Image 1 (cartoon, rainbow, N blue to C red):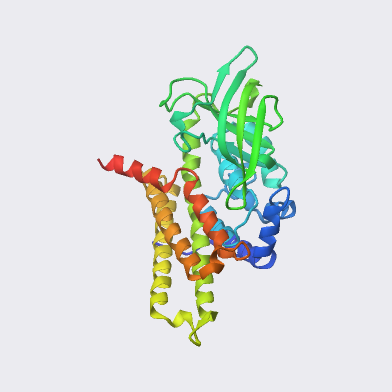
Image 2: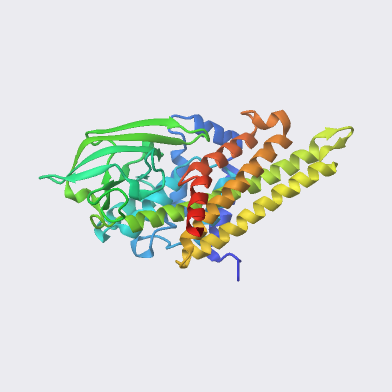
Length: 377
C-alpha cells in the first residue's frame, strides 16, 4: 500500500510545519492560551488564507473535499505546535457535520463563512452522563406551535465561548437508546434561554457547559432532516477520533524529539545522560509506542476514508491504542526531564496535559475498550 503524500497533503504539511516553526514557538502559544480569547484572530484569518478551513468541505461548496486521510496530516503538524485556535471544533466537527448532513441552502450560507474565517462553529453533543453515546441523549426539543422548545444541558462543549453558531444535538422523538429521533439545531450563543459557563481546560484550551432553558426555536433552525441526525453526527464523531489521534501522534513525535535532545545535553558524571543504556532503552520504548500508534492511526484513517465495513471498530481500536501510547510516552518524557518536566515554563508538561485531555475527548480509552470487549463476547 502506498503511504506517500499526494500534492494536497504535502502542501498542507509544509504550510503547517512552516507556520509552527516561524510563528508558533512555545512562548507564543503560552501567551495566546492566557489571553482573553484564548487564541489569535490573526492566526485564524491565516488558517482561512492557507485553505485549512476549507479542507473537509466538498468542492461544490467552495472547499477542497479532503477526507480524514488529508486532515490527519494537518492535525499531526498542529499537534507539534500545541495550536490553541479552534480548528478542531469549527472545521473538523462543526463544518464537517454541516457538509455531511445539512440542506444545500444551509451549506451555502454557513460553509462559505466558515471557509472565509468569519464564522466559528461548535458541536454541542456531549452530556455528563454520556460523553460519546448519542442514543442516551437527554436534551430534548419538543414541538410547539411556533417551532421547538429546547431544554437540557451539554458539557465540555469545545470553544463555545468564541463560537458564532452552536450546533446542538437533541432528541425530538423516540426513547432513550433509540438511534432514530435525534436532530441538530443551529442557534447563536446569545439566544434567549441559553447560558454558557466557559472555562479553561487543563491543556490551556477553552470549553464550556451550556444550559438550555425553554429556548424557543423556529423550524428554520433544524439542520438537515428532522429525527435523522444520528448517522451523520456519529460519523463525524468517529472521524473526530481519527483527527484527534492525528494530533496525538504529532504530540508524541515532538515529545520523543524533545526528550532525545535533552538527554543529549544534560550531563551527569561528566557525560551526557543519553549515553546511559537504561535511558536509551526508555527512549527506544517511547519511539516504538509512538510508531505503533502512528501505524494504527493510518489503518483507522484508511478504513474510515474508504467506509470499510469495520471502520467503527478500527476507530475504537485506535482510541485504545492512542490512549495507551500517549500515557506511556507522556509519562516517560516528564520523568526523563526530571523535576523540569512538570514546570509550567517547559513545554513537555503541556504536551502531556494535551495528550491526557485528548484521551478523555469523544469517549475515553476505557470506554472504547469496553465497547470492543462487549463486541468480542
